[in-house]
Image (cartoon, rainbow, N blue to C red; front, side):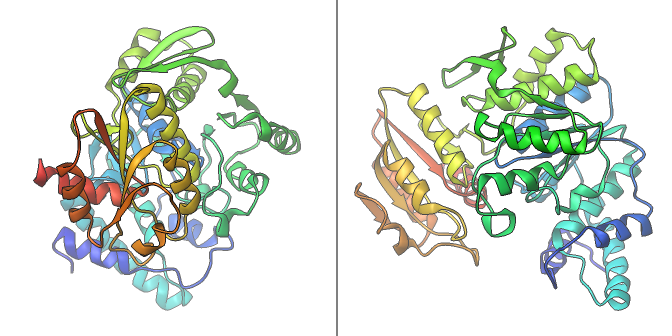
Length: 416
C-alpha cells in the first residue's frame, strides 16, 4: 500500500502504454467498471495552444456563478495536484494517495484479465473523475491531453466543445498537415452540441464541411476579437465591439478569454458583464507569460505556434527593449523553427537541456542560430550566467518547454 505522494507518483509514472491507443474501449470500460460516468455537465476543450488558460477562464466564471466546478488539465507547471481541481482548490496529497491505491488495485486486476496496461494519463483522468464524483461537482471543465478524437477524455458527452486553435504539434500522432490535425481536434465535437473555436480562416472550410456532415453548430470567434493591445500588465481587446481586459498580459490571451466569454454567454445568457470583467481580472495560469521579476519572464511556449505568439507579444509590449533567451525544447518538437523564430528578437541565447528522455542534446541548438549563444548542460548554470550578465534595459525570457518552465520556476524560487 502506498503511503506518500512520492510513492503514488512513482507508481503512476511507471504505468506506460503497452500498445498504441486505436479506440477508446479501454477507458470506457474502466469508467463503467468504476461507476464514474458523469452525472454532471462537461465542457470539453481541445486545441494546440491556449487550452489551459481557456479552461481556467471558464472555470473561474462557472465558480463565480455559484456552481461547484471541477477542472482537469495537463500537464502541470508547479505541482502534480494542479491537474485536478474543484473550485480552484487542488486535490490534496492525501486524496491523491488514496485514489492511487484504489486505482492500483483496479489496474492490477484489469491487467491480469485483459493483458493490457492502463497508462498514466488514463489513470490520472480516472482519478479526476473519482474526485469529481466524491466532491459532487455540478460541472467540470476537461482539457484534452493530445489531439481529441482518440484522447482518453473524449469518452464523455459535453454540453459545449471548445477548440482553441490549431497548429503543428504532435504530428507523429495527429497528422502532418493542419487539415489532418484539425480533423483530430474536431473529434471532440458531438451532433447538436455547439463548438466554439478560434481557428484561423484557412481552416474554416475544413470545419464547415465537418460540421455540415456531422450536424454540429460551429461558432467562430477569432474574427470578432479586435483592437488587441497589451501593456505588460493587462491585455485589452474588444469582442463584438464590447471592451474587455484580462490580467494575463499576452496578446494571445484575448482569444482565450473571448472563447470563455462566448461559452458563458451561451450557457448563461443573463450572465452579467460586470461578473465577466471581474473573472478576467482574477484568472491566473502559471507559466504563461508569467513575470517572475520585472526583468525575468517565463512562458510555456513549447511548439512553433506558441513561440510565434510569444514573439509577437514581446514585440508589442517592449518595442524598445532587448531580450536574452534561455531555451531548451524536447526533441520531438519543431525546435529548429522555434529557435529561428526567437532569433528575430534575441540578443543572446543561453541553450540548455532537460532531465527527460525526450530532451534535445544541447549541442544540437548550436547549429541553428547565427546569434551569439552559450551552451549549458545544467539549467541552473544557464540561469546564473544569464542573470549575472542581464543589463537593466534587457528582459530575460525563459521558454521552450512546459517541463522546463516548471523546473526553472523551482530554481528561481531559490535563486531570487
